[in-house]
Length: 152
Image (tube, rainbow, N blue to C red; front, side, top):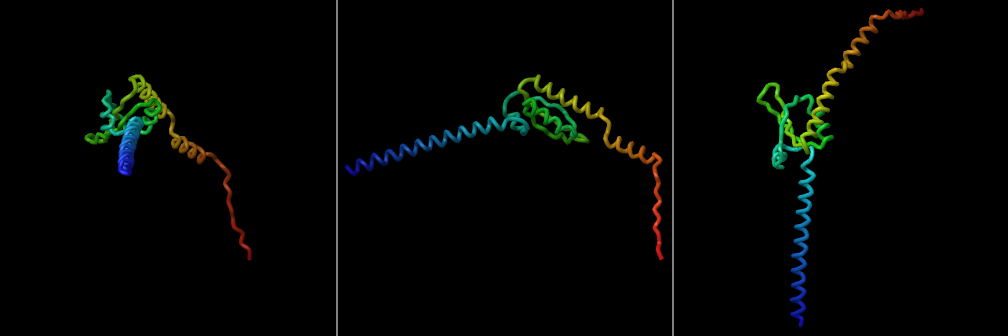
């Protein structure tokens, strides 16, 4: 009788261990799936972008405008990767992208190029400041002569 009880309790322990191992394994698999779905948004490596097996395109961009482009890419939900092509002097930067649709990328790039054009059309604040300093220097102003009195 005692042996039967020990055998049954031992079987319950083994089956519980198997059940908990399956549960842990399923939880880990779910966590990995969740991580992979979250990780494939926005800026990523070229390898990760190509691994997604969707159409990837590229565009050349200058170094000065990379941060500006990143802002518009995030706004439109475009997955992108930036790669430096140092074979040329000065180096060019290639932006590989994967957009939900072609229209989203066109809109993002259109907004980005419009912002670059508006920045180039705006006058420089430093140039305006130098002009104002020169104009202020040319204005006749009061000239004060301070003399120190000497007392004996």
